[in-house]
Image (cartoon, rainbow, N blue to C red; front, side, top):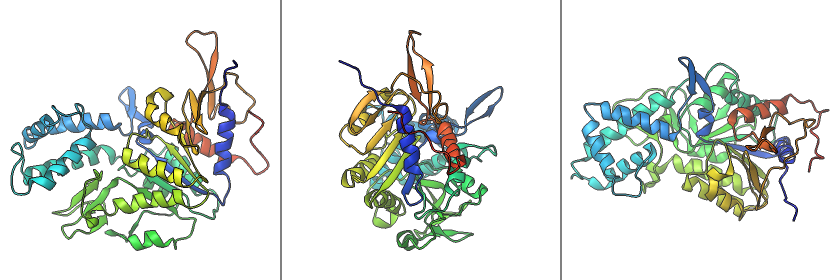
Length: 403
């Protein structure tokens, strides 16, 4: 029986064609792998601009364990995970647990932790996280700059929407450096306030991009009056709004997180739509539920999931894609397309316009065969892919005869 393969050249062409029409509704979903992919100098070597969730957890834990005011309470908190299923909690797991305890502790104590000490742990963890992720975007031509250039490159009927669970300000910096106007749900200057009505009305021109930060941002604050504002610094009594932890807050405390998720639901629900994920591992069950349900309910929407590395690291997601026809997962070693999972074809097409941009070849371990490697799961290559698409003139077309 002849082995069947997917063609990475054809899929790269289809992705490019899906992003090309100026009347198509397009959104990008940028996960934690995007800032991680950007390398900056670190002595004689390099390091990620922002660490991944495990690296961030290690940094926060190191600083909390060294802080005289917090180390004992932090150790007590971590000990609560010893007997549970999460033996290696991430910083998001830890924040979720702190906030859950705050909801139930009231005026008492749990393992010696009261509401004051829990609030102090929450604030300190958020402060350390801000120091780590609140970095400046390098001035060089990063993938964020290339995405911003692509967003502002042509006039469109519908605005480009960018969704991200990241707390950093990298997308904002890139858009502003390229003078691309955008709306993020906040209105104002000195102390921008969250305005749900503006989010729902769609009155801004389509040349304005839309930025939806699903898990909050390092510059979001909830004031003592329960108002949500966006500003650089904070005042006494403000609480930083990063990572919602999906607790059962009252309706006011769940805003603007719910509004951002509603934008993702609305995007997938209305007619033809293209969602491209990059740097996202599909590890967040709450976000996956919104994406998968949106694709199931609207067969004219499609999601291109650009995965970093091989499919073996995404077993649950590939299993899900085998049941959702309009969820296309494209990994380095193969893809799930139309519910069919296959490796990439082995023969290279060096004459193809996207060869070297989204596809390359590498020697197999036995050195006797070669297999195609899909590159766009790496945010750096995806940025180049967008830049290349923008640079091609109307008279130049990518060959579509690959099969």
